[in-house]
Amino acid sequence: MSREADDALINQLADGLAQGTVNDKAGSATTGTLTTRQGHPVTNNQSMRTVGRRGPATLENYQFIEKITHFDRERIPERVVHARGAGAHGYFEAYGTVGGEPISKYTRAKLFQEKGKRTPLFIRFSTVAHGGTSPETLRDPRGFAVKFYTEDGNWDLVGNNLKVFFIRDAIKFPDVIHAFKPDPVTNIQDSRRIFDFISQTPESMHMITFVFSPWGIPASYRFMEGSGVNTYKWYNEAGEGVLIKYHWVPKQGVKGLTQEQANQIQGKNFNHATQDLYAAIERGEYPEWEFCVQIMSDDEHPELDFDPLDDTKIWPEDKFPLLPVGKMVLNKNPENYFAEVEQVAFGTGVLVDGLDFSDDKMLQGRTLSYSDTQRYRVGPNYLQLPVNAPKKAATTNQRDGQMTYHVDLAEGANPHVNYEPSSLGGLKEATAAGEDHTPQVEGQLVRQKIDRENNFQQAGERYRAFEDWERDDLISNLVSGLKPCTREIQDRMVSMLSQCDQEYGRRVAEGLGISVPGQATGSSPNGVASSNGHNDPKADSITSPVASGEAAVGAN
Image (cartoon, rainbow, N blue to C red; front, side):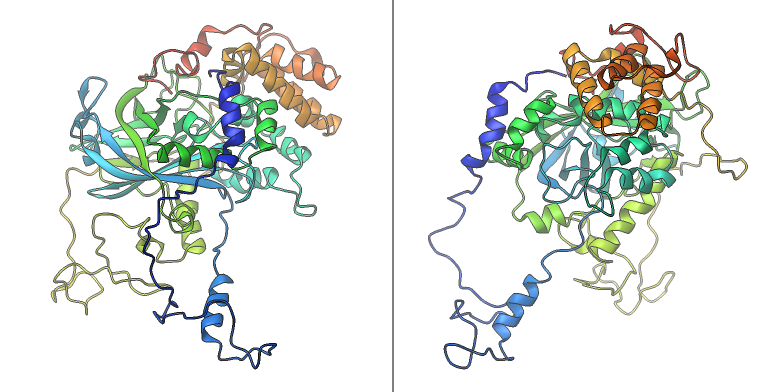
């Protein structure tokens, strides 16, 4: 990561509040007439209807009743995660190739096929654990969710700015979020709860190493990477599939904040990331990201020391290089925050032809949870809202439900028929675009962890890949977070960090004023121990070329 979240950028982000974001030229000299939602002209919007000047008010106050009862209902349930967010419109432009080959060799998804083809999109950036009005300087992964409005319907790619996650099995998702959320009694976020969970979840070491470093506080949404995190699949016209990882590389570079810099900004502006994104687009400085993929054959890969479906792991770029397939440009701000940014709804199960799921257990769980959340939060007809509706007309047999806006009828279809099959003018099945992708699945039904957990090696490689200032900030932040914790929790954390890298664990122990439990030396069965802070050759394969100053092409 470039440290050049320099003083000029810090001051710009901190002082942005004084600059404002209101577009004074947005309105014309001639304005419309105020009406009620029924279309009735409002001739007096200053006083409710009362008996005499002093009151009381009367029950037939329709104008007031409509206004106040709508106000009472202006908010829908806040997202449990990713509540604080910002968004923008833009487009994806395809390169038509991947790794110098026609992209059709790997996928038949239409948005990728033609060089220069543009697909409109909407993106929502967010923080994960904190509430809807929380400061954007808090240490937290950032959500990076993109909705592509393709000719075959919507495709949602729902990820984060970091390439890995805390857990690998979806059954633990409520637990990790509860640990990071405020205490249910005090309503205060408590590092003792966080590290109580983390210190008993070895697979979290890789993610913790990212989150407590400057990568855990991006300077702004414009200066952060994006990742699909989970493993997906592509399949071609013949139905042949490959495993895929998705990555977004910002052409603006990657810039993170130390805790000191974050505190400096938060003291003046707790909306800095939203404001920076909005203001940049208003100025015509449209942010861009290159869209890259990693490709792996669809098998178990026993030659690797990790499971390629494990979302706590990075695929090493020396073996699986990042291959550019297109770019994203954000060029239009939302017209209304609530209608677009708040009500936009994403789901990992929203895929188009040519794209598919892998057997990633975390992805399987997210696919149920995300869309279920939107049906509860926004309503069963959330896909009829303009920001969620596909640009291609949706024609279904689904009817009714709360807030039905229109009927999904095809032109000329019989409105009396909402079932299939029908000989009375109902909808027909579509013609397949190619052979089905039909992977074979077999095995016993079990409740078991994966075989190749290898919880510590990549965390150690990441620690050694950091620059000195990043390591210093990481150690400082971990020590600060662990100081309020019990000695038992501290010992567990130091023991696991030492299995990632001996220096890593030792520096945290020294900061806490404790010794490393057992004073372990040598290699751990689950990781690599090292006594130095220099980069390990293995670390180079996961270092972001953007972060290390190399070219952005094929990197994330």
